[in-house]
Image 1 (cartoon, rainbow, N blue to C red):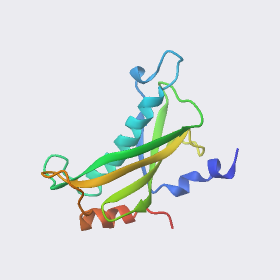
Image 2: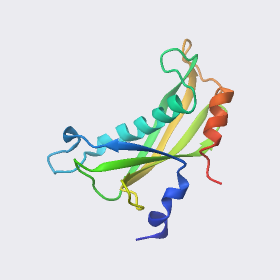
Image 3: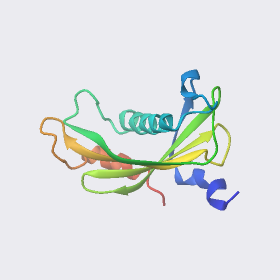
Image 4: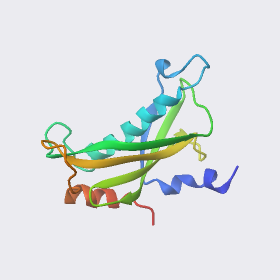
Length: 145
């Protein structure tokens, strides 16, 4: 096991428990690759709503996913209990690139890791918009030291 796999939890500042579901498994008996992107989306949006004050129904500015990537390291399957780790790799004026990792609960090596990029846009016009100050401050808390 490489060092990056054993100490990677320190890269992530926010963790969210995620339960696998029976329907997540594919015919090969493990969670299908597309489901990991749902896990990424879930941890990011949970953080934005819970800690960043984002009102997904009424905020003037919303985040649109413009890029994502995932590296699959070890398979998971229902009924595994997971934890999604979230960090921030880069904050621009209107965008943020998150680092995300999926762990089996209690384990230090990730089962998958990747990135997830939001561009913040004005809800009405759909045009790029600056990240709101409160949200920016909250995102900065997730940056690695």
